[in-house]
Image (cartoon, rainbow, N blue to C red; front, side):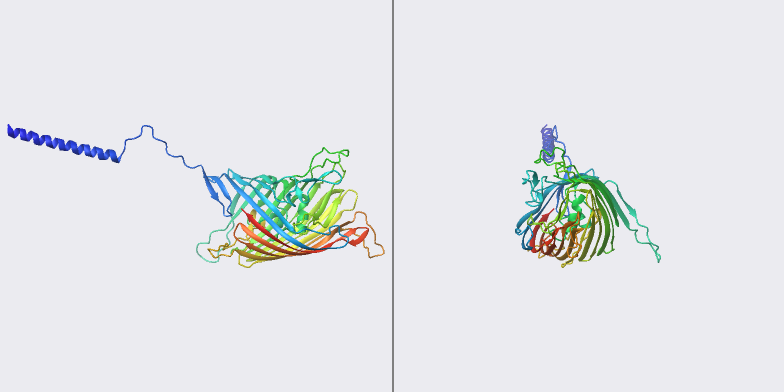
Length: 516
């Protein structure tokens, strides 16, 4: 009996030991895997968007597939400068002011819908003599614009469809040796159908971004030509095509943003501006070739611009158009000597141009020439002409690349951005330009016996400006530009008075620029 009891006790201790071991194992398993929650939270959803930064440091927010984006853009061109101005005695402008000017102060958004639709909305608050100038009451009681100003801040507001595009295999030449030939080169092409307020692509310098132009201002001949029916702030609709060697484009254009176009004025309400809208258009074509090593690019092209329907001023009963420009510097808004004054009977106007450029490593050449024709209701047609030639050398070795969609050249991007820590000094460029614009037409020969007034003659003046520039590209987004200008403007007072009311001047201006 006692032996049986001992045996039972041993079995009981063995059972207790197994139970204890099982409980410990269960406790460890519970600690390693806590019980499931009755209502577990769903896993986090994948992100629907991503923040990006373009190579030009433009911040954007895009969908994961990159088909929809909205990005911020801005630019500031802040100028300071002064003049050594030497007017002739009869010139009505005897003094010009040194000073500052926020030439451009733009901000806005650029983006893409569904990969094929591009859009933009950019406002310009640029300063006292350009851009948003405001209005002022004139001596005649009419409401006019401040010098150089417009009453709308819209610089761009457009939509562009670019879904028609593709690539083409270029035929491979016959191989003079056995073996596998190299891959055939591929040519890419694209198109854009667009409408709205936007920059124009007419003329090479106009198609070049103001962030990338060589000097503070474009040449007067180009500015005067573009202002007829192209240029910035212009309403337009049209199409362009580009490939690795060809660019073609044509656009119908209307008034610039902020232009007066209403029918409320009358001769009994002189204080009310009233004018119909103008309508015009332009076409341009260009060819370019780039070497395989990308060191040489050659561009040739040309185009035509036309004013089909001129403005009609309902109050004055005239068709006004003025050809004028400040002498390639914008510090003093009143400094305008080169001018035809208001031609009041303009029926149509046309401009034709040729353009050429070449980039050979760090050396760059560019030039354009323009021919003007103005058809008038009551006076003989007027003809003007002008052009420019410019060149630059990037001392630090960078070169300008080609922008196929715009048929123009990009700006300089420094290989070694300026940095006190990294030791880079950015890119340095020296540049020179000669420009010429002749707004004289049908002037009489005052020195001859048959001299005298000729009806419809235009003493708009002849301007010649030589500019030397030094540009420092601090990094992709910052640059400083220093320009020295030497100019001469010859201008006859009237077709009946041969007095020269022109001027000579020297000027220096510095621009501080940032853009993204």
